[in-house]
Image (tube, rainbow, N blue to C red; front, side, top):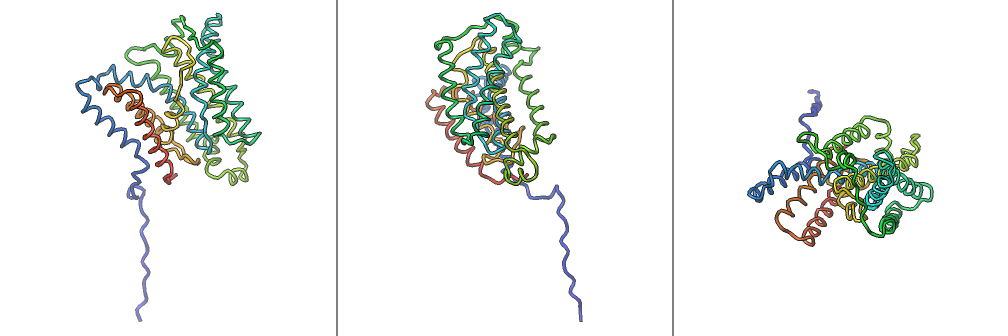
Amino acid sequence: MQSKVSKVEKPVLPMFKKFEWRNYIVYFAFIGVLIYFSINLYDEGFLSSSNLLNIVRQTATISLMALAMTFVISTGEIDLSVGSIAALSSLVGALALQAGYGIIGGLIGGVGTGIVVGLINGLLVTKVAIPSFLVTLGTMGAIKGLAMWVTDTAPVPIVNSNFNFIFGSGDIGPIPVLLLWTVVFTIIAHVLLRKTSFGRQVLATGGNESAARFSGVKTMKIKLLVFLGTGAMAGLAGLLYAGRMNAGRFSFGEGDELSVIAAVILGGTSLFGGVGTIIGTLVGSLMIGTINNGLIIMGLDVSQQMIIKGIIIILAVAFGKKAIKR
């Protein structure tokens, strides 16, 4: 009688695992966008170094806010107030400079404004238990109105050349200062999310808040901290707006919340929390900036740009529903 020998399945080596193309869709899309505009706008100077550096300058503020937003969305929350915070922070920073408090005073005023608003958002979400969508929708309108009221919608010029150089218009050799800001904070955010216990707790909070809480994670504290982070980064983004435009304006950051959220979701962060990627967020931001730049060069008006941006956001949310392998 022959004994049956059961088949033993060989373990699949990591290099031979099924390739999950959905996890890399933002990279493929970014390459496709670059190829499309490079071919169609070659004669318009799309690939010129000056235009490519201009894309970097234009997307720096979105990138910084998106890096912080990655942490918020990874916890399963959302922050719609970042654009309004950037506007108010640019004005507060500009007023501090105008009052003679110098660069440090402008920095403290701008970033401090963002931190205060982030604290308010965080406390309302964690202590009063109001959904973050509603909280930040309300503060978005309130902060926007405050920014308009502070200077009666008038811009506040910044004549401090050192501030303008450091926070926006400067170049170190061929490298824009705004690129350096983006690179530095991308590295910090990536390390924070992937290499620290704080990052693991952020992802655990968004993945399963109840389980995270029973495991000892102070989920309310984590949520408060990520809202403080988005407030601070939105405040810094407002200063970068002010430095690049040499003035603080209430209109800065208008509509940025949509671009920021789209960049995060396109980059691979789950809209429902638990999964986040900093590098993907940066690529998503650069892709949106590239699309905006290409559409402007093509001569599309604002209404057409808004239609295309809306489609991108819908696609971002659709891909945000995919199951991303952790």
